[in-house]
Length: 215
Image (cartoon, rainbow, N blue to C red; front, top):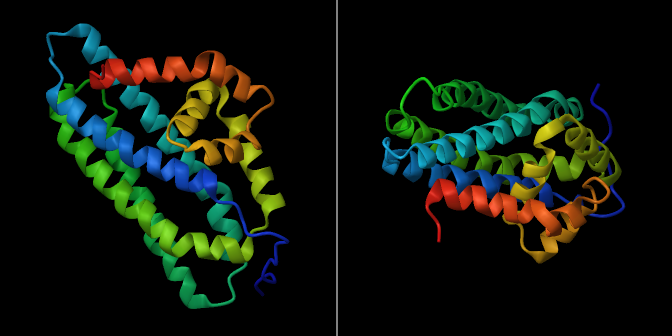
């Protein structure tokens, strides 16, 4: 029997979800171009593109790992309408396809230019998938997940980031507007805001500039 619908005291704050999706769409769009236009003779640029591509792929993998392990199962278990389960069939099928594309996009044995079409297909699937999540999954989350539970899940996610935590936090905050940054920092580790202002922000901006040739 399905669990009762959660009635949160305040609307569920899905800022982190929207920002993560926006960040992935923008970074993968830029990486599609960067991998296509990289100069193989420029070792420094090639390494910068490879390094940033690897970071974004790790962020995407972490994002989907948490959905598969915690978010999807919790919401699915609380559904009262069986037909809504079709949403999960489509989204989980996308995750399988994304895993295949991610492995191919991250295969450093293959030259970056040859991987550019794969990165482009990855971007297209991520874009379609994330917009579908926002359209169909987020309303279900608002009905079945409360803010307190969401914050616990987010803190568990942050602990699992390990050494990538500074770069992942910077990735989030880079793609967030000022109001969104305040909301994200409410669930970030203590001191993350200070470290972002002192160094993480500049380090992330520098790695993007090196990968994308930004002035």
